[in-house]
Image 1 (cartoon, rainbow, N blue to C red):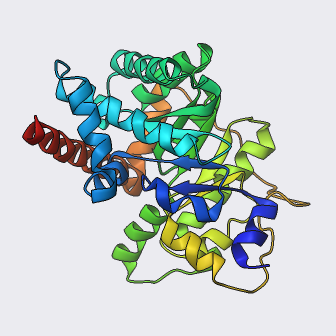
Image 2: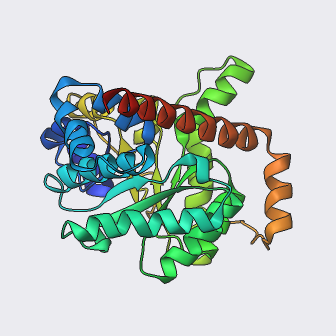
Length: 310
């Protein structure tokens, strides 16, 4: 078996793309999207019809509401291909507004349900700010499942689990980027700070019995992926899925086997502790802020494209 086939024995493989045509060949269980991936996809000729239809069918809606329809349209196409769940992201501009995030989550689920898709097949992606986590807690109690994204540190992961989030997406590659820039070291395998962060979170969840799923995300190379074999889920770009599919060699389970982490202390987390711990972690603070800005910028570009077509 190639490395992708072996990885699927230990971990649920998820496709990280808005390019649903590229998903078919890898047969993932789930798929994830984000504003940057959707922006990239709508600029391809083969997907222009999705944008055209959303604009034509809803001439009186605002640009933001058109974007919601585009996100759901991509999600609908992806759900025709995969057996599992699709993740659809809330506008990052709402990352510090609990009430607006809750309202948007309800709106997106309503759009899916209007198309005949059950809410169990959709994960609403929310940035892992304190306000976003509080919104996730409300949505989960309503049966709307969430995928907590832009997650870089243990306090975010703990807060998400205690809020009852269905799934978290700790970002491996962006943590790697930060420390590589700081140190000049090209980290590999178990030495990678992004890999270490996900392992720490995974082991913390297992030690204290949290049910929230851990899905490693934002990979830069297959070494990071293989070092997390055994994680609940891993969401991987088509390019890296292809590399795994083209590569022979044994894949070993690194997480979830016998043994596991040992000395981990439980963290008592309230809002003040969360904010202080995030403030003390320069990498997590910088990357969270940077990620929100980047997603907002790409949403803005998508709005410009739509405005230019109306």
